[in-house]
Length: 176
Image 1 (cartoon, rainbow, N blue to C red):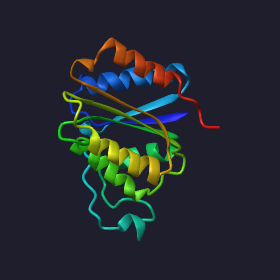
Image 2: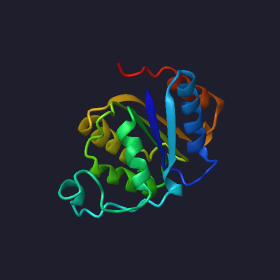
Image 3: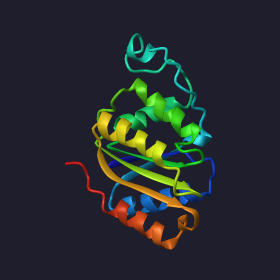
Image 4: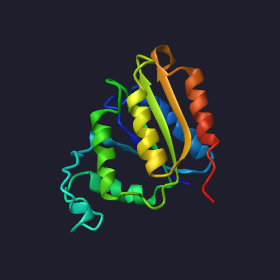
């Protein structure tokens, strides 16, 4: 299965990246193909709401930025993993821009599954990201939920957490 991980953490060696590495390692061991896009290192602007993509653009965004590199990966992905640190009750701004720009594709044709990886210092800040994941990805895109994983405070980078994530990646089953 082709898995696209959108990393929304601005910290290259932070807690979210540790979660991604563990999950991806398990998935690779299970034979899946992993592509990680570090959206914080990309030039991805917010959606202009111009509707070019759904009128003249025929599914292509008018903006020519690094999202053009992400669109082909989205079109080929069978699973998407959203990974983000949570600073103020939702995804990072960088990840939110990338998520909003998926609008140009409407519903990527091969996507069937999704997972969510979140890290924070507090356990009371995840509701915004979880709401968007459940409504935009699971319900609207009709994706199978392959798990929501959240860590806070001392759980971040803990051996228990990383083992759990690696095992979750190993248990992923390819689309038939």
